[in-house]
Structures are given as structure tokens and as C-alpha cells.
Image 1 (cartoon, rainbow, N blue to C red):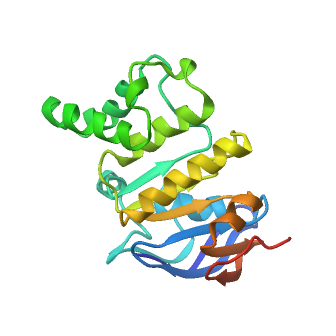
Image 2 (cartoon, rainbow, N blue to C red):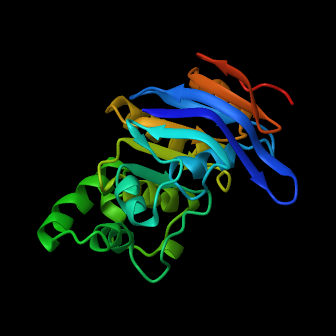
Image 3 (spheres, rainbow, N blue to C red):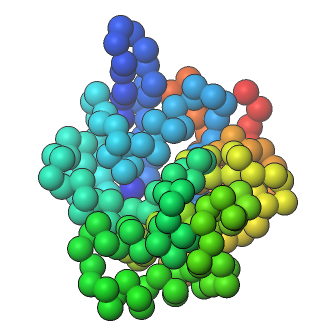
Length: 227
């Protein structure tokens, strides 16, 4: 499903964000990518959805080599990958419903399709009763649920969550991770990028640990490793 083969990423003059990273994530897996700040974990996430390109090496999504993907192909890739960020990235003047619908509108979906899909995904994330509220009327956890619903509208094969609980309290963070677990139970591959030790240790799932741009551990039912 997701394969990195000796992927390197360098920024001038001589900064090595990734120094030869290799791993394979199979369809339906739930994998945490961990490491301290500057370890390269967010760079890995950005490469999966083609916000960053590798300096060298190969990245495969299924059978598709996206190592040097053209701009025109990126929308097709991102319809297969739902992306969730730490800062939610919601449109403040649109309601929860409208924020989710907007992701379908820009993809050219019909009004009928939007009216079918949006209530469904809002129900999945537990916000069916709050669809008419604006982001400022929602808690941080609820705003993140809206962003998750938005990521689900294209029925992606992969969810990439880059520090999705960084702005949330511990209880709300656990609730969000439980939602990712339920989404994974439906067969969606989940890649969780986080430095939250409690979350990683509570999942009992595969953990890939990065340090200074290198994979230092890849363990089934892994734990958060100390720096």
C-alpha cells in the first residue's frame, strides 16, 4: 500500500530531513510514526500526500510511483488519501456541514451526492446534531471531528493524520484516536504521525520510530521509544 525505498530528503545547504528511510505499510494497517521534533516524521507524512518530494529514493502508493508526481496528478492521489492536521484548517465562515460539503464541491460532485454523503460522514464522527454550527461554536475536539469528516468524504483508502491531537487535551485526544481506530476497523489504512507517548503506548499497534531522519525501530505492537 505505502512503500518507501531508501528515501532521502535534503534541504540546502546541508540539512538532511530524511537519510535513507525504508518501510512498507500494508493495506488495512494502523501505523504510528513517532520521534522527537526534527526526527523527520512530518516530512514522511508530507511525502505520502505529495506535499514534499524526495531528493532521491522511491515512494509507492499501491503500484503508483509518486516519487516525482506531476502537479496535474496530485488531485487524483489526494482523493485516495484523507489528510488531517493539528490545526484543523476549517473555514471559519462555513458551518460544519458546509466545511465538509466544500471538499466535495471543489471536486465537482453533484448536489445530490453532497446531500447524501455529508450527513453520513458527520454521523460517523458523532456530529450529526451539530452540523449547523460554525467552528467557533465547536470545541477543539469537535473541530477536529469536522476535519476528519471532511477527510472521509472521498472514501479514501488511506488516512494520514499529522499530529492530530497536538492542540487537544488528553481525554479529547484519546477520543479522537478511538475514532481513527474505528475508521481503521472499516478497512482504511491509518498512518498516525505523533510524538504523544501515551497515545502510542495505548494503541498496541505497529510503531515506526524515526531519529535524525532514520528509522531506528519498526515494531509490531510497539512502544514509544525514548530519545
